[in-house]
Amino acid sequence: MPRGCPMGPPDPCRQALERPGLSRIRLQYDRQGTLLTRYDDVRTALRSDRLSSALHQLPPVMDGQSPPGWFFGMDGPGHARHRRVLAKKFSATRMRRFTPVIRELVDGLLDTVERRLTGPDGTADLMAELAWPVSVQVPSALLGIPGDDQAWFKRQIDALIDPGLSREEITGVYRDMWQHMRDRVRAERDGPGGRGLIGELIAEQDGPDGFGDAEIASIGLSLRIAGFDPVAHLLGLGLLALMSRPEQLRLVREEPGIRANAIEELLRFVPFNNMGAVRVAAEDTEVDGERIARGEVVVTSLVTANRDTAVFPDPDALDVTRANAAHHLAFGHGAHRCLGQHLAREVIAVVLDRLLERFPRMRLAVPAEQVPPFESAGFYGVAELPVTLRPPRTP
Image 1 (cartoon, one colour):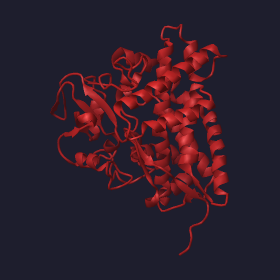
Image 2 (cartoon, rainbow, N blue to C red):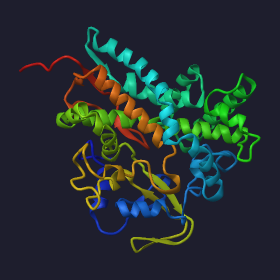
Image 3 (cartoon, rainbow, N blue to C red):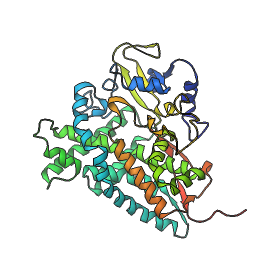
Image 4 (cartoon, one colour):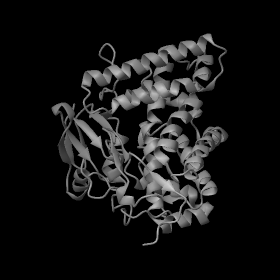
């Protein structure tokens, strides 16, 4: 989708935000739908039990339906059960206890970055050497998946963004990934056990809220996928936003006390989520006084809602001191608010802290407008993020 500003929502979404009423749109495979862009409309839709996640079928699809445990596509008691169990395992307190593992992984990647920066070329690509690897390694470490599995997973994810894939081929890739995760669950059961979240869920299978092997496979795959593209693009766009705004970077560097708020502002500001959250009307309903018919697809543009002037004054400015930055909808809203939000915050915080500590003079190696964009079906970011420690050349 076209963007007049590389750090802004797609132009059609911004135009819809500025028009009164709801916007009718044409979706993939010639489906019709409604686009919601205003903050209040998006919040209302995402907490409505009349708009279903289960009716919006998501791959992998087997025998005409999503596999057991694919909680992205659940409503009602089934979703509530998964959420009740998993929310405890992804609480802010528990994710903070995981921070030393994140720090160790980040420091290992920054060692590679440092070798690049001090080498003959003097530049490093923070996407290739930091953002993409950490977005694979952190969820894998949390789940207890060994390192030899991570390259395979990255290849499968790369295959999914091939624009030439048919609907059936995309579903096939997802199905292969699910079956691979099912095999991992079996291997964990037959091994020593106790490694990461997968081992923990296996150990709890006989309890009242225990999950079967198929459900654990779905939980593991959904968490790996959800932690990959969003985190990588949040890091890439967030670091680009800061390094191209020296006054904001200076505040973050010199005032560590505002870093938590700065992260919330980056989550509000960076337009990493192309698609937003998708629902299907389970019954006739209304949004902002307009009728949405049963069966209609509803797309909520989270990044556009985060630029609504009714909530965020001067929304196109990055302001790390913004008082209401934490009111953003980057992680969604309501019962399906992103389960991994606290983990994502910890990853961003560790990366930001370690980069500022180890490379306080780091800057973009090219002008910001020359950083190449990356756009997949679901997410938006940068393809490369070249940085250097060398001072800029004098004209």
